[in-house]
Image (cartoon, rainbow, N blue to C red; front, side):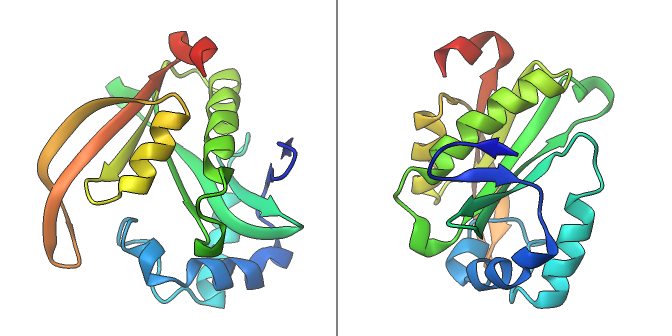
Length: 175
């Protein structure tokens, strides 16, 4: 568990199912995530996610908790082979909690956690070009724009660029 004052990052639990479904079942959220994020988001999808999320040791996926309710999620995917010194970070937050600084706090904590717990040199995020809010959040959390992959994403039958933001372990003091 990572206590950040107003929010906490902790493992996903069965008691989170209802709030997970309530917050994740939102097309505006799905529009900015990969297609494997369920839409609609059902209780069965929540149960499956909680089981998957708790398999890794140390944990790589956390619930974002506010007032004892899961309002979003944040996690990393450790890369393999020649990319094994990298981790991809991803996150989402229930719409009613947007613009409160919660994801920025969660990102900073997750970056610190990742660099302390895992043998990685770089954490990166892939953002849809249309997701202006996510770009701002990453910048506030100390991530730097690194690359534009032109016409690399298709979502809702719209092709768009993928933007890569990253932070290096050597930059951790800047966060």
